[in-house]
Image (spheres, rainbow, N blue to C red):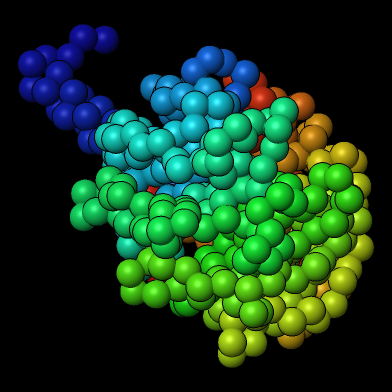
Length: 395
């Protein structure tokens, strides 16, 4: 059957409307973007995934991956306005600022070198005014992996365009960084920092570290000032805790802090005192070699166990944890995150499995079920995960 000109116009118009409707629907299904560094390539790569609101499934955007701006990207942090992503490339000792497009694409904007070497962890305060960077080695003459020294923490002001300013001055002795020492006079004991967390209220900053020679773990606590300067709490001494703490998370009310220890296979819960010093509430068993943790609505805590490739789920009551389930991931989960719009999807990045595992959170009891098409193939060796909501702030 042939169509006349009028019929052809009507048909074309109808098709155009259908296509437009489909594109609009597809647009609304993307509720966020997840950013995943991978380390196998040189330079490193940044994969970007769309989050589907109906299924929780992940789809890599067509232009992904993007160069990370250095070798071995291990850590990342997003600005609170979701316009900038900061990536730490450990082997090049740099922090790369990326602008984030409305479609999730990444655009490199600026690069800075950290005071020390081998940046291992990043965090941005809720006000978006400071970026905190933890280096494995502080800038001391002769310091190297073969001749290790203590790590450090540096504080970068964030400019209005998202670029990083000059690190905040500490004092004439250490200038632009704070050393992670057992005491103010101790400059020899090697402490390897692993993670950093800034409370939602911005008042306090916490850093985990351990002594590789003695398997002794430590938790440093700092108060912050309007200038970004840090003051170590607890009379200048870190809290002794566990053997090798590796990850931190805190709740939205800045009342509780959670820490996982990959040697002792445990998660420690702390209440935050008015002074900012953490006080231990409880210690709870995890799986083998817990690597990371994530909170959902301050009601549930999820811990990724890297050696046995599982996620443990816990309910929370006044900081205390009660385990309710064990869930299988792909091989070697090293990082975990909730979807950026907080709908109720949970993702792990699996280093040895070169994949991401996805789960739907049952909000009535915290239990997990696999999302559609999980696991999702990564190009190789993903190391971290964070994200932004699509189309505006989270309500």
